[in-house]
Amino acid sequence: MICAAQLSREQKTRSQRLFLKFCLLNGFSYMCLGDTVMILFAVKINCSDELIAILGALVYFGFLMMPFGKIVTARVGAAQSQAIFWILRNASALLVASASVFTVSGFHGIAMTALLAGAFLFYGFRAAGTVMSTPLVGEITTPEDRNRFLANTASAFHITCLAALLLISGILRVSQSLWILTGVIFVGSMLGITASQLFRRIDEGPGIRESARKPIGRELGRAWRNPGFRSYLPAVFAINTATILLAPISILTLKRGCGVDDTGALLFSLIQFGSAIIMSQFAGKLAEKTGERRIIVIGYLFLINLAWFWIFMPEPYSPWLAGIPFFLIGSCSVAINNAGSFYFLRSLPVRTQVTASMLASLITGALAGIAGMAVATGTMYLAKILTQEAVSTYTLYRVYFLLAFIMIILLTLYPVLRLKKINGFKM
Image (tube, rainbow, N blue to C red; front, side, top):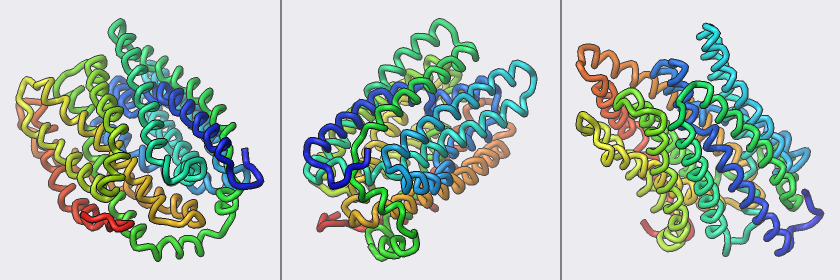
């Protein structure tokens, strides 16, 4: 609800509680619809490795739809806008689920189209809905409680993800059929639509809607003149591109390279979400003590080095070693995202945050999705050429991660290291 004046302390507290409840319910929904289940579903309907690499990039490619979020926010405000797009997002998941019907009916091409179109809309509506999420967090928090709030919401989200993951793993132990995964996606869609109703009740001041109504050009100019923001864009672009190259193929390597079944793959995701829960409690405190830039850079360096665990993985694979990449994906992603949000909010004045948030997401999301899609599919194609004579299936993924690491160092290391410090923090 849009209030006539700035929010009172009581309104901020109430809105924080609603946001937290949304994160709890949305965690259940996300785990039923998220990257891991989506990739398992794609493997089940016999998608190629290259198509799965594209699927992983769509998480970011969907940011192309962010301008719709600004248009709707200018009319109804940030909270109502996210609620609307959240309904559309979760409805799009049903298009993904329809791919199972086309697959068993023998229409493989239509199934692939439904999967990719549904996934693009799913991630696209999410991007449109969250275009104002960072300014909204700034609206319902104060600088003193912002890090704590980000830590609590991240923990709530990942705890319910963990609970949902355990439940889904138990169901898949009984049956790993395509229809079970289809049912999981359907349930996640319904939970997401329900969660959107909580978001409708969050209060906000008039500032975000007014900012969304302003012409983009002038506000972009103001944001661009900020040196921290100018260094933030290429740094996050680089981090997202590196993530596209590493995270989705990690699940694929488990499934096709190591021969792990669906239940086993989800159990490795437990490690990812467990590490995210732990890190969400420490990331904010570490950022306050050492500075957001330090957390972003260190998190990125740990994240990209997960490739070496896949490169040197013994055959047959070691479950202990295979768990380390997922630990790094979960903990480093949360640390980077939380520190990145706080870096953004502290770098820019409130009046430019809405437009800057959209620009940042378009560049660091959509363009990173396009770049990651091209590089990931090209790298996978090259790895297949180089391993045509290989006896072991795992060799393909070993070579892929070696090539991916080289690409990451060449393309992404420099922009991240150039991220500027803010507020006097030293690196």
